Length: 167
Image (cartoon, rainbow, N blue to C red):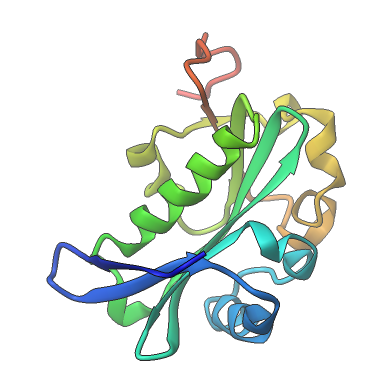
């Protein structure tokens, strides 16, 4: 897939593309620099999106697929790129991929960005409401701390009954 050149709200340009095996080390470095887990990244790298400028990785987002549930993970943007719209762009691409792959719902575990994701349609839910399949992910098996907040968003027109939503 050819990289897509995108101009962000602040008139900075990035090349958006799917991650390749050659990106693994750079993706893990970017995540580690922001204290985000790297466990499981290699296994799901073909479901990651990366943003580059001048051959440097400046943002990443990935999705893991578990039947009709998906896990949005590893959304990170270099500090100098924050507030540019890049995090939203990467998240939306990963969310779109989850829906295209057949997921009806997407979840995420947030340790520091809980206030960001409601802008993308996510709502906090109780952890015990996560589908059992998600507990196979590295993030649920301990890569994310037990204190991480679970958030949910329905996909493909699924009706959100607010069951389990924390207000």
